[in-house]
Image (cartoon, rainbow, N blue to C red; front, side):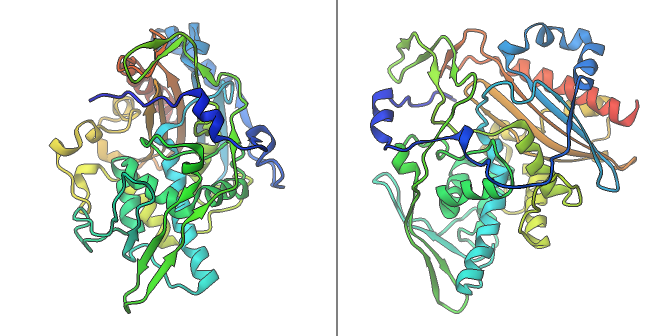
Length: 416
């Protein structure tokens, strides 16, 4: 399967921008929150060095691998102890790891519409999506929804989190809208997270600011309409390391000998990603920022989709031949199984991401026999050739690193 992406020429990108671009360094900073729990430096690096035989390649050149890692020990009383390695040193492309918060945002937005219009929308309310672009069609029926046969917010969340469906994520992103989802990030204190574009659709900045008309079909026959919307927000990344690689492959296979700019790509931080997962799974933990405005039913939807093995899902129902590599377990699990080989002893809520040579894993893990819980989030870049937009990234090296990291942290937490 080809993993190449269409490259938008820089001239086209520039032409799509209007005056008054907002630098991300100057946004999401005006909220007043309690102090977020301190991330201690040094302990995680020491843990890696104590396992030098497994991590020496990465430790020798962490800048090339753009490695970042954060682990947090979560106690029964909700207290948290955090340890980081190279946190927020440079930009990384978050890929599908941003889908967890988009799922939260969609559930919250349902409540916002209900409060605004007394709409009585539910996650299970059938949803019709109207075409916005020439290559799209009207969508309402969904044979993968074995319960209702229609698109719903809940079903799109399940598709998004179970097998990382890009089309399902795009529908959630469109439902909430470019402007509202970024405002939510600000409201929750995720000051390094920005949603700039859909996934696996290569559209202009203006197109990514626009959401299509949607209709919810109510049980009594009424229709609640969400109109087409246009965001006025434009973001740019101003971080170290946003120009990546020595060159990149164009659509025709030729190579441009200059770095690929990620100035207009989605962005997240390791801390924000981990905080999102903790807020979903352990809302009792005080992270110094507001709790998600969702119900316990909403939380159950999220937790089930984040922890269910795809082949165990009843709706949508997946078979191995149709989802291929997505049947793989979380990247940390092989390492966890070296500590305790019984898979059912580990409750893992996770959302990974992988694209543009970046591999991201984000989990909250509970070892059920001991009831010990920790969160672990990491990023790695593997591109020895250093040419972007090719199919020859060294992802297996990242998988090995994550297995070793999962083992090292689990042994530390469980004292094994």
